[in-house]
Image 1: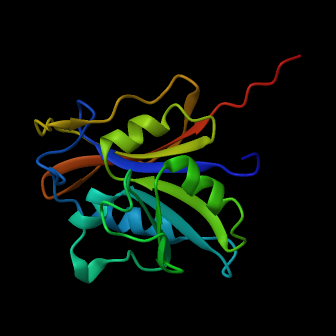
Image 2 (image 1 turned 120 degrees about the vertical axis):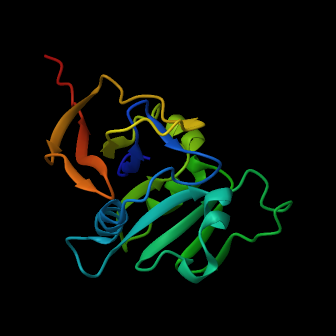
Image 3 (image 1 turned 90 degrees about the horizontal axis):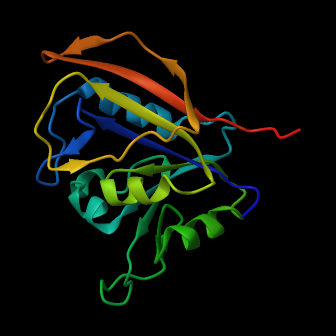
Length: 187
């Protein structure tokens, strides 16, 4: 997989919490709009972005919102047969048994512009170790929501590329931040 990279997008509280009891711990419509904009926007209008998620994330999305529109939805399951799901439903919902298999398939799809890992700590924390991870989009929420699921960290190999000033919505302060992997050049 030489010609592929991916990003991740998430929101965290002050203690890197990302959720509580399988749900977001806060209500920030602006963050949901940002998520949709980042994961759907492409430079080439003939292409789409792909979002990769665990099957439990897929199941947690209300059925009226599935699949996430204008994106290729890739669902990961360690046991496709046990979960009674096939390899593909249509061109917008694909199933894979591993992140590596998913990425290797997406690498050859000419209609994919960007790839994003979305929602849930295990997948985020696993993907942090990948050399293919290029950017991390984080909504920083200024509050401790006593979350029971946490994001590990932003690796030292990433630098803050851009950010917004903190804004307030529903009494909650937040900022959008983008981290980019440092490309080391050895002489």
